[in-house]
Image 1 (tube, rainbow, N blue to C red):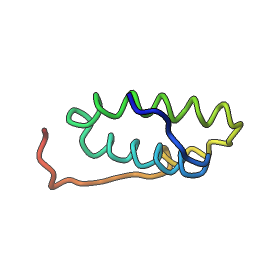
Image 2 (cartoon, rainbow, N blue to C red):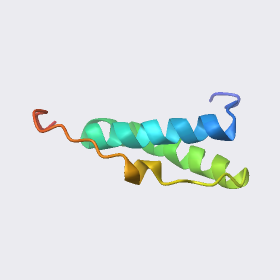
Image 3 (spheres, rainbow, N blue to C red):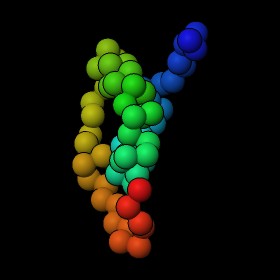
Length: 69
């Protein structure tokens, strides 16, 4: 167990956006490891009444040369 996570709401949102981008790049590889962090970050942002801007839905990653993992 890690004793605490010390992030501002903006930092937590940036980390959540990066997690979502990593999930889009390699869903089967990173997904199981990122899901617990994603839930924690969403709860933190909800508790802080931070507006979610939907950046994860606005960012599109297109990598046609990447092999399936």
